[in-house]
Length: 107
Image (cartoon, rainbow, N blue to C red; front, side, top):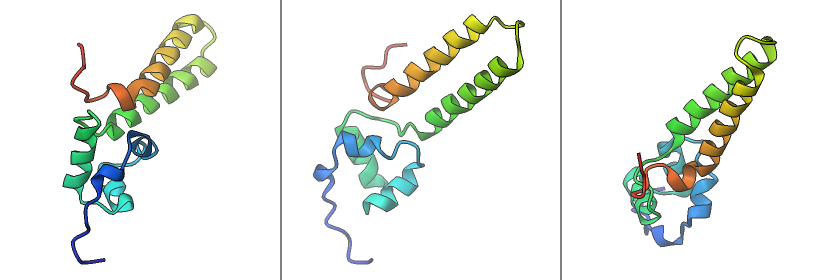
């Protein structure tokens, strides 16, 4: 609806944001009744400088391909090695909401 929403961005917690990480930022803004700029503002308030949707998708694609190669190959890349990579990606995915785009990013 029109009428320039009251923009109550303070009400949106980091936990609420985490529920939407699998969606593009524009879609999330629409669902929360915010404009994209307001959503970005909320993210910055929680220390997120970037919306992790694309990064999350890329991790999930890598996971899928690793898991299917783990199923297909007996041998080749050692199964143990693949499992290690899968574990690393899973923990990276878990940490995304709190690590991706935060100012405390150490590279």
